[in-house]
Length: 82
Image (cartoon, rainbow, N blue to C red; front, side, top):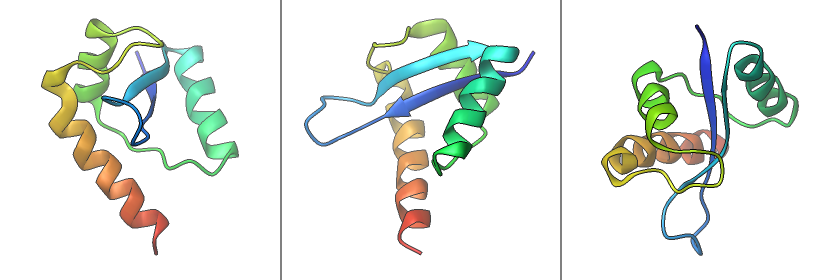
């Protein structure tokens, strides 16, 4: 089943935060909202599975996901700069 998580990070946060997560129709809606707002969508099935099992909406992502999320956020920032 398809899963998705929306993650946000700003410099004033101690770690990236899970804004929303879902599976099936909820996952499709999360992706559609991001695309409608021009937000980069990155697919990482392993990472979304880890986030799904270890965090809820409103939680900071767990430390063991920081490196993977940092790489994705760096990619997104680089893409926005193009």
